[in-house]
Length: 235
Picture 1 (cartoon, rainbow, N blue to C red):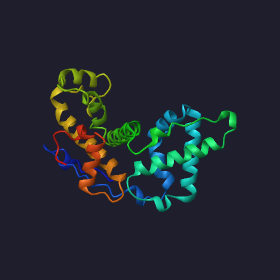
Picture 2 (picture 1 turned 90 degrees about the vertical axis):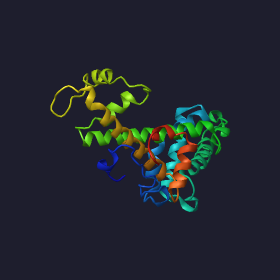
Picture 3 (picture 1 turned 90 degrees about the horizontal axis):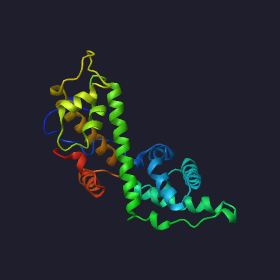
Picture 4 (picture 1 turned 30 degrees about the vertical axis):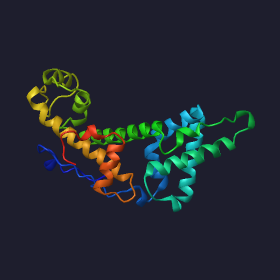
């Protein structure tokens, strides 16, 4: 992903660029490399489908081996989450077919349909986790801005007690001068953290679409229930 324009994003009422990322999944050099980013949601669904962590991992190996050898092929279109769901169904069946008869199970393929609520929840959680990781990497590269640490403390708070948050911050993170954080210094950093996180979420969604445009990215954000990340921002 490209670097964030922090000067633009630190302004009040920030506008999030829904199509900033130029790396849609259909243009990736490595199909297997793309899929490896989404192991967590895929493994969770396969475990539900088969009732077995071991069989879930075996199915993933089948899928990744196929993609490493053949790429996306003619199926390189549409939404990545739909492509992966079809791949998971096929890989699961193939993995089970390779087992001895006594070890075979009947997978719950109803969990691997395009309208599967379980898959959509796992997929959304996976995108959010990747956005959190991007925010953490940003903090490591900009140690004077503890955006990841602060947003983790405030994300679930409707009314933020900045004195309490400052006390928690001072339990593990000091400012660049080694001085304790003052409550008055935290709101602007939290605004930046929210804006960065929202942009990372938008980037993640954009990269999972075939030819992303603002309308389609916004629709996907709404469909997956990711709107909360963009509260108070223009998208």
